[in-house]
Image (cartoon, rainbow, N blue to C red; front, side, top):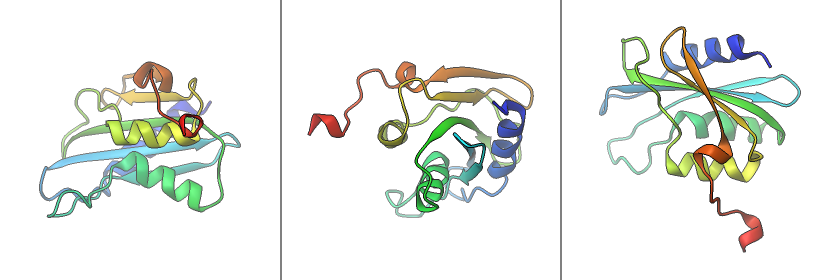
Length: 135
């Protein structure tokens, strides 16, 4: 896997976040099974509920482009203008959305700062998923 390239893409995507309300900029980079990278950044809205997370921007861009097989996601966040600080795991909505398209062993790289990260699987972050098979 291209971990370093994926992390660099997430850090770069974070620079394009629109976060005038929270001041928290989040970047995501999604790696497809065939090696393409799709990026996203959080986009806030004054009404809050229309806001969308970086992970879903990246995922929806990839799905819209016809992609359906994904290998990994890198994710970082923190105050705009600062180095990413701490882990920013996907929110519950993003975990549910990722589970629609990604296997339980899908890797998520949680970027601690510009140099360190932790690897988790989707199953570790979302052990009791609700999927289409439940309907």
